[in-house]
Image 1 (tube, rainbow, N blue to C red):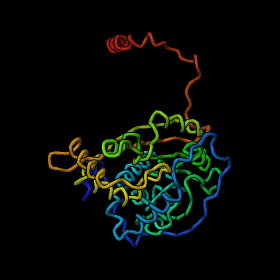
Image 2 (cartoon, one colour; image 1 turned 60 degrees about the vertical axis):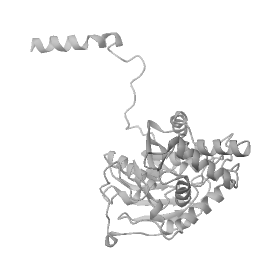
Image 3 (cartoon, rainbow, N blue to C red; image 1 turned 135 degrees about the vertical axis):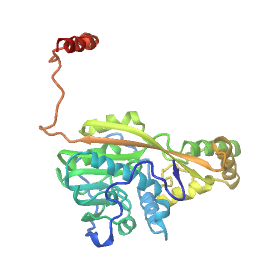
Image 4 (cartoon, rainbow, N blue to C red; image 1 turned 180 degrees about the horizontal axis):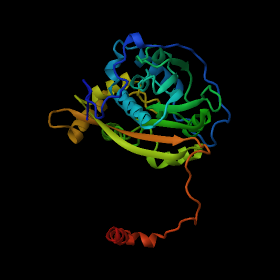
Length: 346
C-alpha cells in the first residue's frame, strides 16, 4: 500500500537511485510531432481532448512542488525499470513515450542505457525533468505521432501515458515501427478498475441529487483487449500482467486534488464541466461510508497493466511446427513412473 504523504515502496529501489548532480549528462532538443507512416486506424474514436490534456500536464509540472504528487508515477516508473533490468542485455538507444518528468529514466543507469530520448506533449514536464545519469534528449512530441524513423530504438518504454491516447492501436503500431528488430517494448498503463471507489461514489451521489450521472472518470482499456492490440501491432512473445496499488487519502477531496496535481484530471470530450456543491459533499459522504477505513481515511485503487512485447527477428526462438511433437500428452501421466524406474536402474 502506498501512503499519500511519504511513499512506502512495495518493490526495492532500482540500482540507479540516488544519482548525483555531478554525474548528470543531459542535452535538450525540441521536435514537433509528425505523423509516421499510416493514417488513423479505421473506426478510431476521438474520446479525449488532447489539447486539454497537454494543458493539464503543463499546469501540473508548473506547480511549486510537483514532487509532492509524483509518488504513484515514481512507483510505477521504478517497476518498469525493474523489468528493463530483467532483460539481460544493454540498450544503446532507448525511447520513453509520454515520459512526463522522467519517472523511468531516474531509476536506470548508463551501464544499461546508452542514450535516452524522452518524448512528451507537455513542454513544462520536459523542462522540469528529474535527474538521471544517462545522456538524455528531450523531444516535444505527441504519443500519437512519434517523429522517429523506422528501426531506430533498441528499447521503448512507456509509463502511465497511453491511457490518454485516442487511437491506442495506432500508437502501439508506431512504437513497433520505431523499434529495431529484436527490440523490446515495456509499458504500463491504468486498467479498468482504476479509481472504482471514486467512480461509484460520484455516480451514486449524482443520481440521487441530480436524477442521473455523467462520466467523471475517464474510460480505460480492458486487459482482455491489450494482448490482442499488441499482437495486432506486430509484437510477439507477449507478456501482460496486472497489479493493484492502493493509496490511502484523508478524504475524497484530497484524492481529487492529487489527481489534478498528477495531471490526471479527466479530459474526455463528454465530461461534465461542473458538479453541484451538494453533489460533491454527498459523494464524499458515500465514499467514506462505503469504502472508508477504520482510521477515517479512504482508499483509492489504481489498477496497473504491465506489458512486454518484442519486435520480430529471425534469431528469436519460435514455436515448433504443428505435428512435430515426439511424445503425446497421454504419456505425460507416466513421467513419474518412468523417472522412478530410471533411478532404480542407476
